[in-house]
Each structure stands twice: as structure tokens, then as C-alpha cells.
Length: 131
Image (cartoon, rainbow, N blue to C red; front, side, top):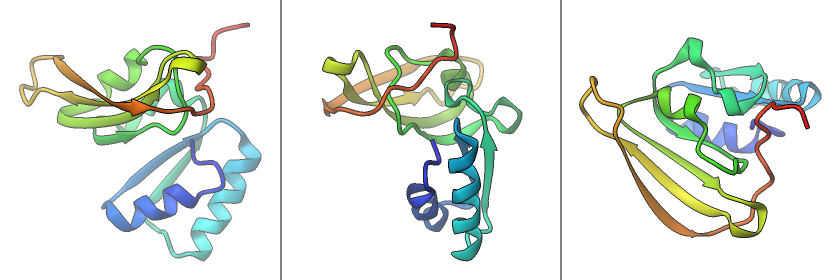
């Protein structure tokens, strides 16, 4: 999630292009203004559910998720480029772990390795399903 744009601004200094999805339009609008003022011209923002990623812009070399789904979102795994890496918190609220997911270099394979880094506590990434 883009949130207020702080993490997105940092990423814009580290990456050639940053694509960021925020669920809440008011936060996205605020972040867009901040990022413009900071001169972060290599950022594209979208209002939407991060659980679905941004398939029109995929594949991505790196994906950084800033809210925790209970299970790995299949859409994000599919949007990871061969040889790509995703870092995300995942799991139930009381049992979240920071994970590093790496996709194999073989473009014809959807094979992943997962490493648990340590226990964390993030806000929940909504999956868009009715509650």
C-alpha cells in the first residue's frame, strides 16, 4: 500500500520505476501530491486492492508488500518475473512472519522458494472477498 507515500518515495530513489497500489483513494491522492513535491517522477500510483497487484504492468522484478495477507496472494506470485523476489508479511494476525519469496529463473516454470525471516505484526491485506 502506498499509504502516505514515505516508503514509495524511498523506493523511488532505489529503483528505476516504482508501481504502487493503495486501497484508500484519499491516501493515494495525498501521496501523489507529496511524491510530486519531492520530485519522484518514476512512480505510478493506482487506487485498488493490493491483493490483486497490478497485472497490466507485470511482470515485476521485485514486489514489496506492506500489509499482511493470511496466505500468499496467487495474483502477486503470478506477477513476479522469473528470477524475481517478493518480500511480504503473511499469516494470521497473531502469527505473521516476514517472508522472502523467490521465483526460479526459468520463465517456463512457476516455481518458488520461500524463506521465513522473523515474526512480525503488520496490518491485514484485504483480499476483496465479501465479509
